[in-house]
Length: 253
Image 1: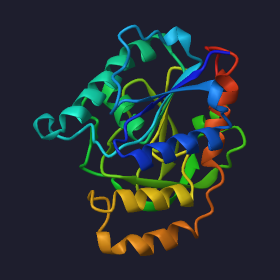
Image 2: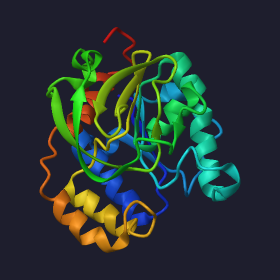
Image 3: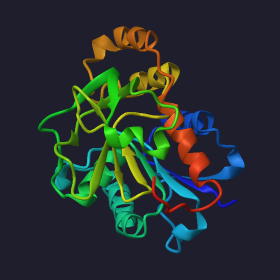
Image 4: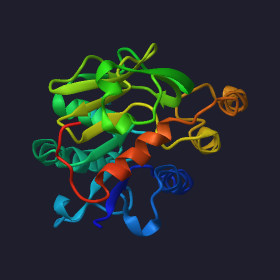
């Protein structure tokens, strides 16, 4: 079986390691089924061939696609450019792709430049009610996911309108575009399919002073997170693995 390529953007060791472990656990991956690249430490190989992978998963991170270019850290800018550079081939060839949180910004910006911004739909750290759309109910990545479920979020920017060529799969009240699909195999979620309360507690500590929430509310947020019933988002990761583990599937959903 071809491995899945997991691309990570988080520059903090603890956050990156926690996220990677969550992808393995929640997605049901064994370590030998994946290839991990921390883009803060290693640029994408010049000879990267997407045909060598069953699928690509992009994790979250503290950067924002919509931030002004002159204000971005050089490493953050390089990472963004490298991932954005993959999207034309991924979308044109319908390569299996799952972007998580930051990946929504990447896919949205690729499909419709300017559609991702901080104008509306930013969500504070915490749980949110999500609902499947009609298209979501029939999508293979949503098998076993109920019409309504809770997910963990925390983001400053969001897709403001449906990008060109995208299918709307999941919505919520605070942020209507929680999950999209392009073609048959390219997906992105605004929520975190890999996250649970323990993992989010780690991130709350790490990003306490990054502008996601008032630092003095961190302990209250952690208590609230541990009261959440987060069971279904991880099924999306498992369905992604199951659908593409045997090789590329370009069939209808």
